[in-house]
Amino acid sequence: MTIAFGGFRPEAFQFLEALTNNQNRVWFAEHRNDYEQFVREPMKRFTEGLSESLANKDVPLWGDPKKSLFRINRDARFSKAKHPYNMHASGLLTRTGDKHSPGVLYFRLDPLGSRVAAGYMQPESHILKKLRQGILDAPKFWLSLEMSLKRKGYELDYSHTLARIPRGFTDVPKEIEKAIKLKGWIIRKQLPRPIICSDALVNEVTKFAVDIHPLLSFGWHALTKFSD
Image (cartoon, rainbow, N blue to C red; front, side):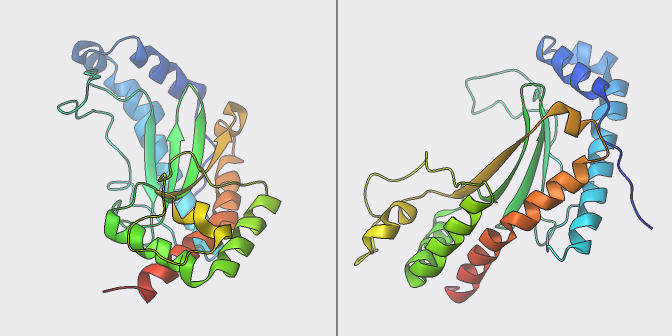
């Protein structure tokens, strides 16, 4: 059965904007039905529709509506910000449907700017080491991949890098030093509200995923090749 998703309704943004100014459990309890109707349930349908669309494009990413979405409640125990609720809704798709599987497609519904992102976000050290080894093992292929992404209008986020070549990596070619220092591979794309609230949303995110698929595949290959 084809799963159609016609976009989020404006009420989703209205709820999240109101939640920003009403960070208390009493207000949320009184407006829980709005959250379920305009945010949570549409996020589930979007996840299903996007998973089906990606499968049709042979992009091996999918999400479980029950497991792939992040909770609206925050764990504020280790955070200076103590507000109890996230002021956005988000979820991610992976090869296994498990949020902890490396190589993700992330979606964020946010009144301050919705977006989609893909890559290897804050990978654990043993995963990051293998990703770096993948670059060092195939520097020309990596540079070609980055150039291909740039031609499509995408650039990796180079704002989170090491100051020096990481320990254990020697004889790194000059042209990939910058890439080896990366702490993760992330590409983002902003999604304007008219797209979010239209039936073009699934196609828009699917196109992004198709474009970024080579980056994810490069990483999956490295994780397999340099597995312990």
